[in-house]
Length: 420
View (cartoon, rainbow, N blue to C red):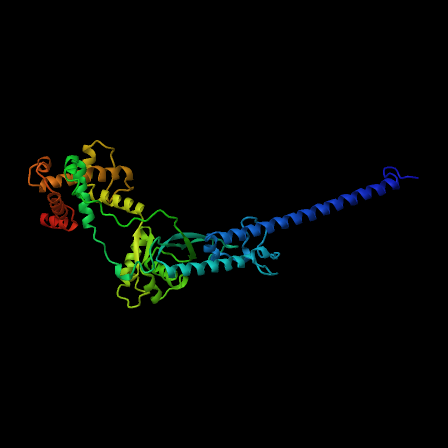
């Protein structure tokens, strides 16, 4: 007799068979999912190795020194620990044995690239660029002596100089460049631009602008250097950065530095300022490696030059409110009915760049240069004088005298001393 509610034994057996089949199907799905996941992870690892080999120098190499292998997971698939066992990849010639993590293979590739960088630095003139970087450090359990924090570090890049032969920048070429001739040319150009008739009259005598050998259009090669846990915002930090790059990373000594020549060092205003101070501190050192002034040359960026120069001129020559001084930028700005600007060394905020840049270079400088021509020229007015000019030498002599009397900071200081 069948028990009510339970059904016959035949039906129970069929139900058990159905449950078994469902469990088997679930196990097969799980196994298939694991196989697909392993194949996907293997494909991702192969793609990563291919990208690392084909790329010039990925940024990841610069940060490997700060990675903790015990906590590192690959960013492409966070669930896969790189310390797990991975099957060999013969296609990439990078066999991964049991117990060897992928991070070690990446470090091996990093060492190969560092060797390539050392060869480049020893074979052709280069530029070094560095700047600060804040790295976040996180701890598992915060306490009084161990908390989450940011540390100042330094990143650097090596750039080979295009079309410069080895030894093309010998140490003997490191000297201060005189810009006097360039300034005189610009003074003359202001006069010629204001009076096109004079420019047309002397067109066959006017010299072309002074042009340093232009660099042809090319693709710049960049090689990021390893990150340095050094704060470069101090004199000691700058010395440590250069010592680390030159001696430890690039493996250079006195002989290789002499063979290489001058290193062009680029950076922001603070970097170049600290580099200049380093020149002064170690200028008398007999050891060439420590005497930075003998083999490094700072180079400002064009954008930094424009911004810093514009701000400095605006602060120095802005003057005071309601000033009667003819050199006051405030007075010229007011006479032109331009937008009111707050400037000066005591101003709470920087002046607007474009407004002051146009005011200084496009208006005030031209007016003062032309007025200086009026003072120096033998006639009462510049218009009368240019009608009598016959040769380019007459204009050049006046421009040289103008540069000496009105474009010299020393002459301005002497006039200020006389006034006192």
